[in-house]
Amino acid sequence: MKWIAVAILVCLVPYTYLNLKYRKPNPSSEPYADMKNRAGVMRLLAAGYQRIELTALRPMDPRAFKPERPTATSIEVPGGLPPVLSETLIDKPLVPAEILRVQATAAVSTATPYMIQFTCAQPQLAEQFAAVEAYVHGDKITIVPDFERLDGALQSRFLETTVELALPAGVLKPGHYEVTLIGARRSRQWTLDVR
Image 1 (tube, rainbow, N blue to C red):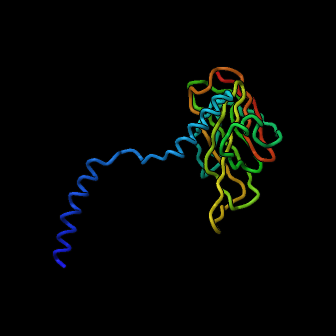
Image 2 (cartoon, rainbow, N blue to C red):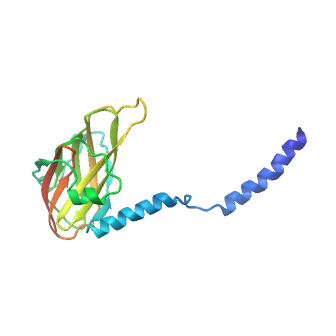
């Protein structure tokens, strides 16, 4: 038995050394996912869209969100992705059923991030917030929250979810924009001046 242990150590030590010294630092190649992402980007660019990944978090106390300037007045609009964007996206996001409230300023400087807080509702507890992306097309900004289905018997705690997100500084050119936050049945829309 001791010779087996010695043989394992003799093989294991050089293997571990070589593996750690010459291992590729990046994650392994995923050709299918890479080609799918590349195709998605090419389709968005061909349709005239710019995709922006947004930083989002779920605040502990939603009442603590206080925009510096007066908030924009949002109106309710019919839900669903714009037809051109829906045809362009390869993977359709699972958007919330409806957007209930939005807090955001009506104007922002190009030097500061644009902060938005919104509350959305889902019809069932088997889905939870996953990510959010913005798509800019001319003077229209479409913000698309994405939910994910929970596995098995897992459930979210609440039907309503409050999310704070930040559009990075410098990604929007100065101008007047129409911002739409997408829900499946009901979306919210407001105007934004970037200076």
